[in-house]
Length: 280
Image 1 (cartoon, helix red, strand yellow):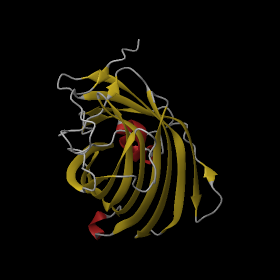
Image 2: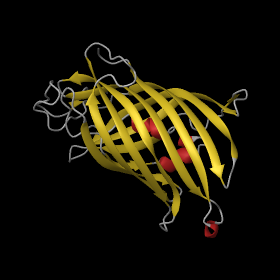
Image 3: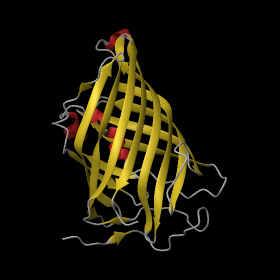
Image 4: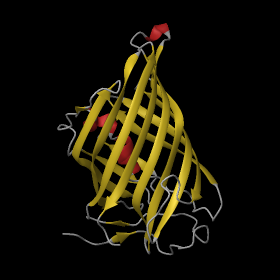
């Protein structure tokens, strides 16, 4: 049974930068939300391991539903990827289809504050064992992006930083630091539909992933630029689209860590996530 319960805070201010100290999401409990996504990722590997560059293209749907509202007002979501298809090509050769059958339909559980802050997450390793799970990490998180502490006023560039932690799988935990600047506007997409609010951002991103012993599994730094498009609801904001461009440099240790050598990767990815259906 669909409860049709809109979950949010009262007193949402419709004017950016005026009277809204904490923007928040509006969700409907027990209703499946669906987003169509496309992702293109290019990887170049050097250092101790000089491999041919390759490109991956992936598309499908992200589906999520609000399964629980906790006593503290945070939300428990089940989020999954379905209808996946993709290709991979090396050195600009003909693309080959990816086998994503083991990944299609798999899900993770996310607990988030009403601002999109990630409080807890479960089952990342469930994706890892499916093969290709690392391809959809960023897309799953992009379906519930962190909101700024307030909406910027017209012409304002609003700085903010936050930390994000999650279990990558197999005893590895990743910690990210995002240092962002938000502004109102159309970002790099150039347009926003009638009645929606575009919020562009640029972020300096640093990441460290370590195993249970505290040893580095990988580190990364880079830049993420993106645009969020929201529909204003009385109960809060509803995500309608997210477009992003991410450029990272990653350092991976080699098997013989005593040598001090590392594998260097450049990862460039561009993604789009567009909401399907819903009220206009």
